[in-house]
Length: 212
Image (cartoon, rainbow, N blue to C red; front, side, top):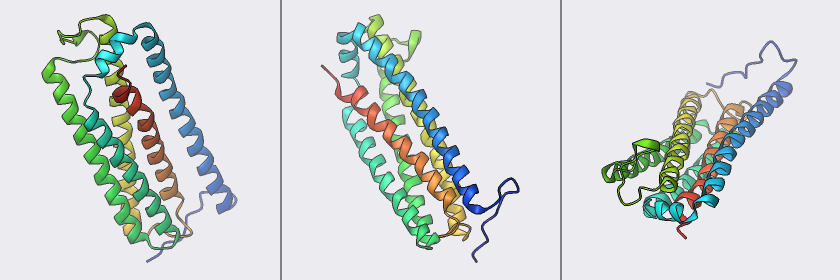
């Protein structure tokens, strides 16, 4: 059964409520971009200081796993876009299924990241002063590994947050809460998930492909 779209008491009408929600999400996404931009700038600065150490450290990251994670996240963006399209067409249960696939893909991404972390830990690669990787004992290599863990762990936390959002709106779609005239939560959750994917597309070449 379709539920009426709720109007919060601080808004005069649904149009203003929707505009405020979208503006709030875009401002939040902008703050997230600034957060990752700071990490990218730090990476660039240290890479300029220690180019050889960074290249040697990055060569120890598993490019096959990194590329696979990139491809599956791109696939998850497609299924999220299909979910938004489905809910706008008033097919909420179809949207719920697409969102469930996206969440499953996000979980798969986290599993692969865990596999890669386990490989590093077995080799003695840890962040900061905990690093015990005898093959690359230099300060530059330690900074490269530290930034690798900082960037990928922060991104993984965003994947967890995004998957949680998608799970919530998927349940709402399945229960008929979201449909063509009440699809803003699905749309905004999808925007957040697209940001998570885009950030990884920047992280992937920095931490897996720049080996020279």
